[in-house]
Length: 246
Image (cartoon, rainbow, N blue to C red; front, side, top):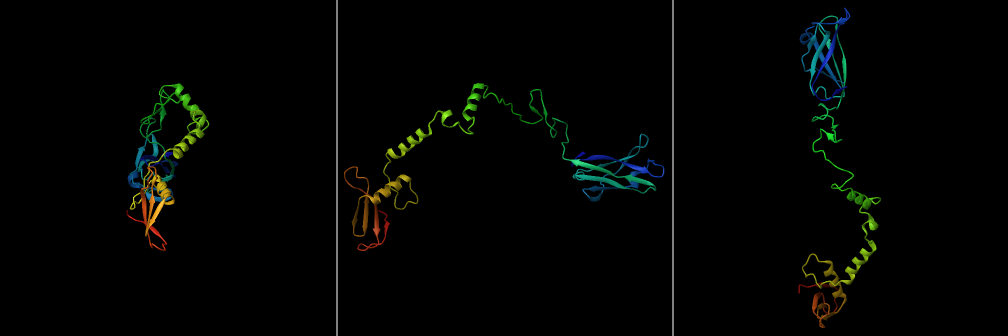
């Protein structure tokens, strides 16, 4: 097999059927009409054929195939000679996608050097899978942490109780005071703390005066202060309310 998609110089045989020998001196650039069958498609060969050596290789001729011509799975070099009784013997070539460089060179197959590192590959990493930063104990501790879990060890190896962490988190949420705050009437977003205080104000203490509803804040100081105010659509028989800009 040959490397695909590169220039190749191939040889072929011109056979003298009358004398049953290879034909020498057949002037291939004139007498030989060569064709290239590229995965079944016939085309003329771009290169000019030449005789290899009439004395030591009688009947053997050569021609260069371009990279485009060899960019196929199977190619067949064939043709005919204008000389009577001379046959061009077809040559079939199978091409593979193989490296076209020496091992360990750029574009070639990688090799292993004396340190068992891949040679011929840029930026090969020198990694010690037994140690971390030169410390075997650190590597063992890391293995113990992750062994059998797929993540950071779970509650036992980290020495952390998930239930205790959850309980502490819940205590922080439900037992820690939240600064009182209300979203302004024109706000397009608000914090969860503001939402909680606004809900508290709506269900807590309020006062009605005419078509106004005033809700109050936390009465920590002993007196009520306005938290929000709403406008009713009717002072006597209201059916809706909207927060006003006050």
